[in-house]
Image 1 (tube, rainbow, N blue to C red):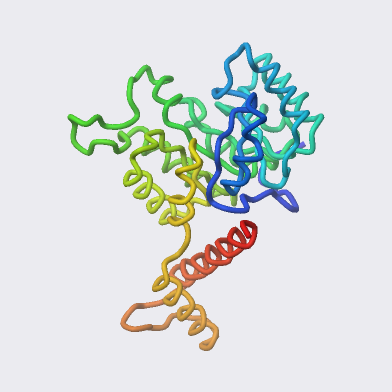
Image 2: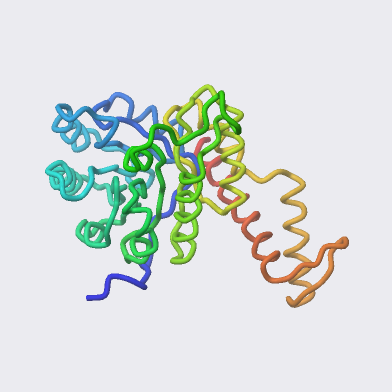
Length: 292
């Protein structure tokens, strides 16, 4: 059976741009995380010590939260925890998993669940396009720290005594870019990686702006304090919305085609960019309504 080059009829999409990680062995935090973010990623992998994973799976089953706004990060394929994680998820209403250290199409197909493939190893990075083709792969995310560890390196970002302190090194930026391209090439959404320095709000804001400019759908985070900055970054500014609405309205009035608006040539690609701005406006309104 061909598991590639097809699309699910109703694939899950993030209902908002801020995805907050929550350790699955801390059920006392589940509801609080859901209140603060658009989506909660209940983490059975790195956020949980190996000797706590059995308890985390029990907590996952016993403390359900909204499945439409929940992702479960499972352990890498080929591990015993992977199989046990899938068995636990099968006892819940959750239907979306994030597969850590995704590296091949077989492990995505194997879950039969809607899957966000986490591209965070050298092998996974070279196979991002193949992975994104799989029908039940609904999105891609990338991760820097496991990637650098797999390279035998020591830091994904430039240090304070180097040029461009706090920014990603070139290899990490390449994986970030190639993951985004692979997702777009196969019609899947993309999630930008976490900003680990919680106090570096300026760095987070800059990365969110860049993610939005490149068409990312969401950004993952590790602390509730990061959520407002992510939401603000994905929410279009007033002048941007005004421009986008004028472009769309003028295109509709003219029946399409190339035209000039205030000295700017508007063609198909620019029109699609304007339409995406209005899509983000609608998404931001939906998030606001959910918070009320």
